[in-house]
Each structure stands twice: as structure tokens, then as C-alpha cells.
Length: 468
Image (cartoon, rainbow, N blue to C red; front, side, top):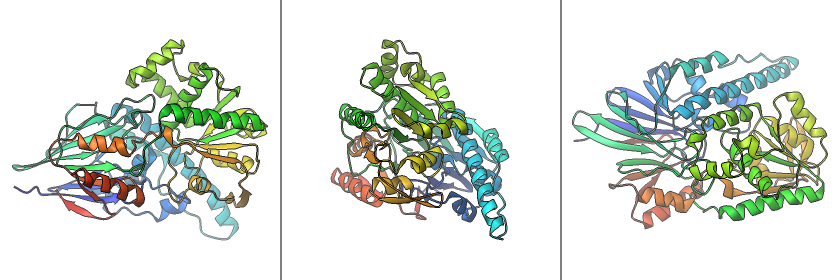
């Protein structure tokens, strides 16, 4: 008997960011994720953005994890009338307020700056499309659900979260859809973790599915072995030290910053770290690192055992040369440090945050090194730099790129091609796979490999609706 249900791909279809899928079952409408697309001019993107559905018609949101490209549109969804519940894991619920508050405050600060520019040009001012009160409303609507606990989202949808092993609180979304006597099992992978990386456990296996939405960020490649990646990282740090410069690491406040602190702590404990000053230059990353310390029981046991072996109780005690830069004044002062420092600052794709100010002051100095430790999406400043641009525009100025640029992909918190194939192949039944969260080249490569293994696989297209 057919199920009266459909799924529409609105975001992270044929692109990496902006995760958003609309599930309709009978008269009910539920969103899987509600994320921002990350690009250059966020003010322009916010103000021209229009949901392809009425927010007040949405009954619930199911959130795979807290990263902004999965959750960042929630304040705008609430500002435009959504009043349903937001289902997520307990870890995600703890992190959500930190990330969304920072995102909205950054938006309001940028809007204030842009309105000053508009006033000088005699243009009308822009009204904010959302406010901090909308973040408060999001948190009031949030309903935490533990891993492997069954939860009724609506009378037709039963939810169960599995650990995705990507960041703290990240989840694979399992949904049992029922409509009369018809039933279907829908799985959304969220972002699947890289089993080789630290802190998070390996992604959980899925027993059975009819339809699977699977991420494909690294669908065209495998990550190199972690020990080789760590050696490459150490070599880049050594080169910067020998050149008499500083190291700047763009990193997302959630997940990647904590992993990099762990790796730097490991190099320190192994007496391989020459720099005597490591700075976490992000109020949000500082706050999230404290949350990670509170929830260390969710770490991979092998990593907590290593911390204990060195007598460390958390990431900060694992890396004694770590300094925390919370204020704007402390951040600005870092640009007066001439050499010997490692600065970790957001955002990870250099499309905002403190890292952009550091790049303005340091990209043109040949002794400095910029180390990218994560994926850089199309349209971001980070992508321009890893693609070899010799000049970039920052704060209205052309800046020469003379610093050494490094790209170290092995630290990725996303599964590589072989890991994606292994996860998909372990799912029972004969599921139909739809690839999301990937650029076309990566998706086409992964689709080909999946088809060769006898897996039914299509690439999801933006705006496409499929019957369930």
C-alpha cells in the first residue's frame, strides 16, 4: 500500500551547505535540518532569503546537529512564525544556544556597520530580519531526545537518533513513517564522522532502511592516514617557526577547534611542538570547549584514556601553552605578536569572524603560514585561498597573498569515500540512496562507486520532490 508522503530537497542539494529537507506525511510537515548556506555576503543573503514554504505551516524540525549550515536558519524560521517543537540530541541542545546567539549577534553587528555605510550614501536603512529574542524562542521550542530513544514527532512519525560521530551531539536521523497500514523507514545520515579522527566515536551502523539521504562531502576521495596527517601538520608548524612567523588556523568553533587543540596537545606532550604560545581566539570556541569538557563521557574512550595517560583532565590541561582570547582587545593584540604563535580563530571558511581580521594583518607577510584543516565551500574566502588566489579583497581593500597556504584534509570530521561506502553497504534491505551535502564532482564519483557495488543511488537535485 503506498504511503501518502513526500520529501523535497531545499538545501544542501548539489552543494555542501544549507541543509534543509521538507518531509510531508498526510497533512503534517516536518523539516529535516534548517541550515544556512555559507557564502560571501551574509547580510545580503539574509535579507533576500525567502523560505520555499510557510514557516507557520511546519509542525516540527528534526535537527541532525548544531553546525550553522544545519541549524542557522532556525531564528529566522521562528521570526517568521514557526512555533512547533525542535527535536535534537541533548548535546545539540546544549550547543545550539551558543552557536545561534553568536550567529545572530554577528549578523546584527554587521547590519549596524552596513547601515552606517548606507546612511553616509543617503540610502534607506535595513531593518533586522531577526533578533536575539528569536534565539531565545528557538531554545524554548527545543526538545532534547537521547540517543537510541524512540520519540513520537507526530502521530505518523517515530524518531530515533543514532550517534553520527561527527561532533558532540551529532546524529543519524532514523524515522519510521506510518500512514494507515503503509510504513516506510527513512534515514538521514546528517554529517557522518571520520572514524580516524579524535574525540568522537565511530558513526553508528543502521540496521534497515527504505530511503537514505546520505552526505557526500568527500565522496570523491579518501583521507590520508592520521599519522601522516599529523606529521604534515607538525611539518607546517615547524616551517612557520623556522621562518620566524606565526600560524593562523581558520577553524569552526564547534568540533574542529576542539580537535585541533587535541592534536596540538598531543604534539606538545610528544615534545614536537616548538611554538610556546597557542591561542584559541574565539569566545564561542572557548564556551564550546568548556561544554566538551563537561561531556567528556561522550568522547571515544581511546582518546580519554590518552588524556589520562598524560595526567590531563581536559583539553586545556593537555595543552599547557594554551591561552584563551575572549575579548576583541585581546584578539587585536595578537596582531602585534611578531612570531612564535599559533592562533586558532573562526570562522572555518573565512567568511566572517576574527580570522578575517587576522588575515587582513597577516596574509601579506611571507613568514606567516595559514593552515586550512577543513573543507572550504565554493564562494568563500577560504576557497579562494586554497585555490591559489594571489590577491583577495578584505574590508574593501586588496590584500596580497604572500603567506604560505597549507591544506590538510586528513583532519576532516567527515567520512571519506571508502568510509561512506562501508556505512552505506551495511544498511539492510534494499534502500534507495539520495546523495546530499556534496559538490557535483564528489557526488558523481561516489554515485558511480555505489552503483558499481549494486546500491541504488541518485543525486538529489535542489527543489526535487520524491514520493515516499
